Length: 503
Image 1: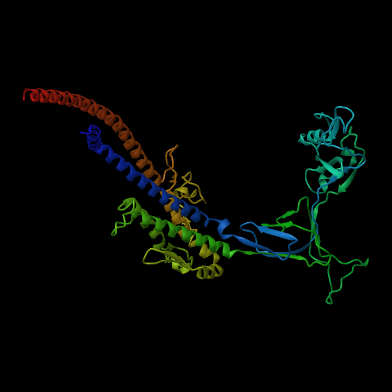
Image 2: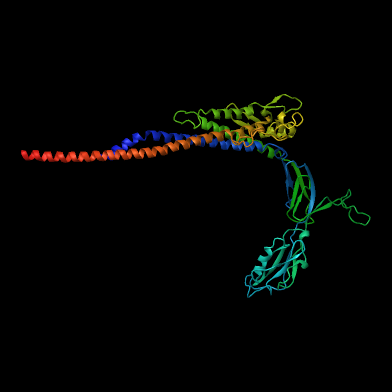
């Protein structure tokens, strides 16, 4: 008889309650993972919905440049228009290099010193001087001392000007004419001779407009015989020119040759960027609906059911998403108040199978025809009366700012933003008690399941102790049994021997 096998079989039976608990943990973990998958999709939907709110989305502008001499960017809400200019110069940073003397090694303080004493003076931004004490008399130490002074007008570097010849180079900390410095601001007390200007600091300049010409294209001259100018110059210490047109920033990249044509910059509404945001919203919505369907599907044939099959919260969430689209939007047409318009009008369609499609062509056509109305299909809401300072002075909320689940969402973006935020991170409503913590529906479900998993794991751990004691008891019991059986076997053998001797 194998007592070990017998004990193992008995322990399997004893461990059935613990095995059931472990199975519950596995199931709960699958549910938590499923909720997390849905939560990730809903968070992405919230981000896509928020991207369609405000002027940053609907005031997107596209700036184009006719030349690589300048690159352009535009802020959302910038004014449409165009401007032509010539890049007359790009910004340079003032640089002076000591050329009177050089050293053979920038790090050798004994063999290649650059100062006789232990200190030297530099000029600060406010025009005062400051005495610096380098670590030693080497060029490298002098460079480190200058760069360690935050208020100096320049930064230093050791440069090679020939084979085995090193010297000090000083460069203004910023570009442009105003940052230039002359010989009077150079360090004193160094044994490097004189310094010369190797790069003159200068501002970038662009000239807008051209000289006046007559009908034949010939320059129009003033009384002194000079061309009549219809242009003006803008300067910048950097290569960046902000708000040349409202919201337009120009960055000069190179000086144009005299024969180069002027740079023409155009600023136009970026309808493609808006359409891309709508497409991203539709894609995120479809992704969320697909994830919910996959996690809640029932068992079919040999295919197992989803981890959230039959989950009422998931059914309600799916319904909220679909209703946001199928319910249409009210009052997008100021000429027809109270009317309900379908999102199909601007290219967003819900099919019978629950899939959402987007017609970019239809959307762009409607956007071009009536931008304000098209925006209301996505970015409209009604503020609650409690926020109206006229009808309810001191009311709750923030006037002019959408607050999900408090204001009435009407546009598709606002509706989906509300549904997604309630499901994921939760919202704080005006009037909620101070210190109220945000928690979305999915977050609460995940927390509840995790709490249950921790409790189940505690029970599993307690069963480990209980089963260990039970195995110990069985081992003692079977050890006594084996001892008794051994004695009985010995007695049986003795009796058999005695009987054999009688015969």
